[in-house]
Each structure stands twice: as C-alpha cells, then as structure tokens.
Image 1 (cartoon, rainbow, N blue to C red):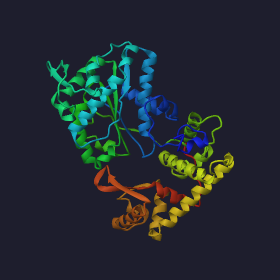
Image 2: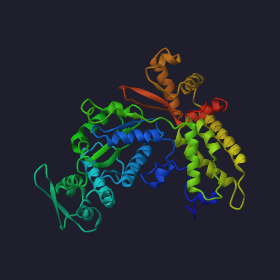
Image 3: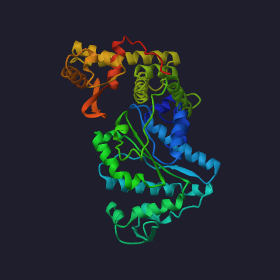
Length: 438
C-alpha cells in the first residue's frame, strides 16, 4: 500500500476508512467505539451458558465487528484474570451452508485450528494444556496422516499414524476427525471453564426463512449441542428470529437487536481510526466533522459512509497530484459537501425511468424510515397492492430500492431504500441534513 496506494500520501499506514469487518484481535479491540453496552450484553449471554445468543440489526450496522471484538475481549479478560476460565474466538467465522455435512466438517477444522493457535493460553489461565500435537500435524504439516477413533461414546480417544492417504475432506470424515476434535475439546475445556465462540454470520444468504430453519434444524445435534462451543447467530432484521423454529427455540435465544451507531459515536470511531493509522502529520481526507455530514446524509449506514469516504479520498488525491499541498481541514470539508451533492445530483438524473407518482411514493417511504411491507399499500395512497408493487418494481429497476422476502411471511416481500436511494433522497430533500441520531 505504501508504494502504490493513496494512503501514504495522506500520512496513513493503512486505510482509515476501510469498511472491512473488525477482526478479533488487538486492532479490532482498539477500533471498536461506542458499543460498550452491546459488548457487555453479548458477553453475559455467552458466558452464562445454556441457550446460545443471536443478534439482528440493519445491514451496515457493524454486527459482525461487534461480535468479533466481544469474543476477543473475553479471551483478553480471561488471560488478565487467570482464574481457570477461558473463552476463545474461533479462528474464522462461519457462513451458513445448505450442506450440513460440509458445514460440520468446516466447524471441526476451524475449531481444531483455534485450539492449536491458542494452546499456550490454557496454562496461562491455570488450565491444563491440551495435547494438540497430533491435530496440528494432521492439519498443518505437508505429510499425510490418519486418525483412528476408539473407545465408547462418552470417552473418545484418538491415535495418530502416518499413512499414504491424502488429507482430504472425505478422508477426514471417514477416519473420525470429528471425534478427535470433540475429544480435544473435552480435554481442553472441563465443565464450567469456557469454550470457543463461533459466529454464524449472514444468515440471510440462505435466501428464505424456510431454508434457514431447515439448515439450523439439521445442525442442532451436529454442532450446536457441543458443550464446549458457544454459538452466535447473526443476520439482518427478521431473518434470525423467524429462522428459529419451534425445535430451536430452546437452543437459541431471541435476538439481541444491534441498532445503528449514534452520530456522535460514529464520529468518535472515525477519530479513533485516524489517530490509530495516521502519523503525527497525517491529513485526513474526510475529517471527523465531515464524516458526521456523510454519515447522516447516507441514513447512518456506517458501511456506506466508509465506502464514500474512500471514494472521496481517491478523488481528492487525483485533484491534488503528488507535489501539491492538500487544502486545510475547513476547505476539505467544504469540498466533500460539494462532491457529495454532485454525486447525489448525478444519481437523481440517472433515474430517468421513475415516474412522478413513483417519486412521491419514494419520498414518502424515505420519510417513513425506508422500510415497508408489501401489504402496506393503502398507507401510501394506493388503492390496490398491485399498484404499489409496480411502483416498487420501477424503483428497484432504478437501483433506488431493494425487494426481499418477508421473514414473517414467505409469500410477501419487504421493500427497503437502497444506499443509492438514500443518496437520491439527499438530493430531493434539498441537501438538508436529517436530525442527529442519538
């Protein structure tokens, strides 16, 4: 990045506006701002045992970053206290998969790698160090290996030996790899001493609530009932709560709602990133004050605001080539406002296919919060549902709205204003800023 990237020109060692999910490490710990109560809430739910927690919230609210950092802070706190309890963030988070066999195998591989990576931490908190050498060899050495599982259902032991069989997923399943990982978990975490925190993210990619329920049902006895694993389901509004079938209501708690970051906290988060990644003479393309403007104009969507901040940074660098000084903070703030207004104007002009009645409907939806159900046609002055459906279809075609399956009823849809739509609404509102969100 220092050679070809733009950030070194501004005095940053990394991109301060990256929308990438915060990682479960010291960097993520430093950069997560404004979520202390949510972190404490999810930690209490994870550490109390019993049913697994779940989390819902709008896209771009930072749910996964919150969970990653909460898990890392639990591990960090355990290492500080040294009281024979240890919670570890899984080395990777999980995406739902319709193939339960493939998902179970992935879980076992990630759990094994997590134990290998954190094995020194067990002695540090006063627990016995698990013997991870065989699993480490199997997973990470170029040699081939084979597992054999023996013993009864309650006490599974594993032995390791060299073979000429390739280290494939099929070989893992046939040779008792899952049994070996379960045995390692039992050795590592005696009852009441913690476990590994596993996050199943983006549950909405299963597309329908029915698919989500079917997949979760199949995984109940395979991975969700392993005592040493603490799970968190994470997804957009509605999908997690509706995916909890009657059979899983005793496995997963009702979702904890993660709301959009208040404006002041979003500004504090950017200020923290600028200070963390920048040197003493760094010039922030988007200052904290300018980010507040950007965040509010884009309906408090952190992911979109960060994306636009990056785009503006590249534009600013192109306007002031190498060797030219950048404008001062106040001038850059004004340039950002002009830049965003021009982008909003262009986005509106590109939506030539939208008819006046559809624009009226679009404005009313934005003013109502940007999310409506397909059955709310009379609320917006339509005599028939088909009329509103036609309006939504026109706005979806213009990339101003998105249509999703209603998690409450698979025969209906939920219609939401897209990120481009909020930019256009900013134009249509005469560039007036919405009130601050607290």
